[in-house]
Image (cartoon, rainbow, N blue to C red; front, side, top):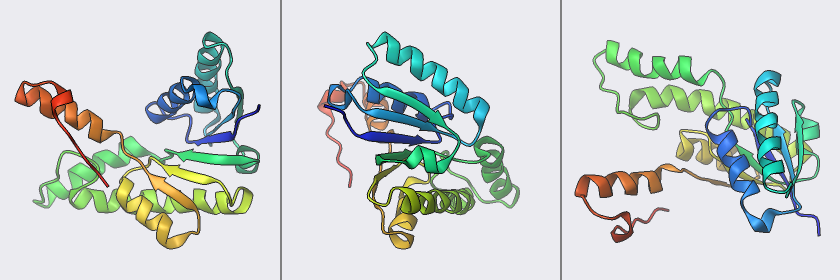
Amino acid sequence: MPGPTITLIGAGGLSFGPTMVNDVLHTPALAGSRLVLHDLNADRLDRAYRFAAKLNAANGSPVTLERTTGAAAALDGAAYCISSAEFGRFPYWRQDYEIPRRYGATQVNGENGGPGAVFHSLRSIANTLSICADIERYAPDAFLVNLSNPMSRVTLAINRATSLRNVGMCHEMPIGVVRIARLLRMSPRHIEARAS
């Protein structure tokens, strides 16, 4: 039986794109799905597609794999959209640290807090709401999983500005548990963490 169509928006990124492809391909319940890689940067998209095709083949081709730079084609039939898209992340991210520091403001180590995160939020929210407009136009019944940071602020904007069903997800919590366990010199399985 064919599975759902899953669209990865921002699939050409070096962090979340490969991770999400790997997760989909290693989730038995998603076998038979159509996985559409979408990115505006054709070169990055081609690199991501080559990686995904090799991984898909190595796993017995559990999904039908496609790629496109066009939003309409990417969202055609999508049941789920996973978005991790950002524009110019690293050059701007550097400014998010340097500009507050120049004016004497301490910037926390992370992209989700401090004064630099306000500017990161403004960039990410505008970008994500543009993506949401495409989803509302081409796949209004799709469920959106937002991975773009600052995750909580971007997800709040999605909820206030759109009618899309969505959730924001962050991978840092399990990573944080491992870091805390290391600092406390104990096994991560002895630490219980909850988030909402």
